[in-house]
Image 1: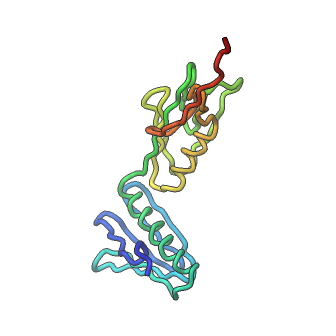
Image 2: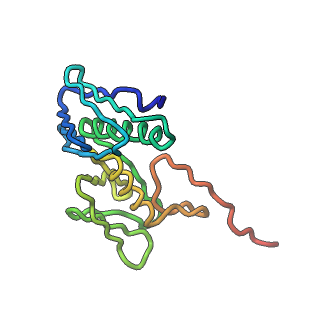
Length: 181
């Protein structure tokens, strides 16, 4: 039995859950999310206990994997409509900075042109400082993917450490060329 899949998902009082054939919708103070699931997995909403139960049809390998996956995706939806998911990035390098104009994030990271990224639907971007980016949203996947897209523009390089990195990310540094005598 899947350890993750068999755990019921508790739902707080301010969250509305609707389960139809193959689709679950979760609505809370931070927005509304919906998810479809594989036909070999069953999802049941218990309104009396305010819990969502995920089950599977049999113990085949794929169904066991889908069981835990479906439960984790639904749990992330329930958590996201209550508390926004957040990814923090920092920009390191002389003259490297970010600016935000409406729904467009502009990055100046050492290229000849300014890199412009459009914010996806439901993702909020904040800049507490020109070298700090905070990506927030109710959908964990879209927040993580947009943060990865930002980092991909200029990943940290190993010699000087310049680039865009997650806060707390450790970049292995290389020594570089040594001068001969």
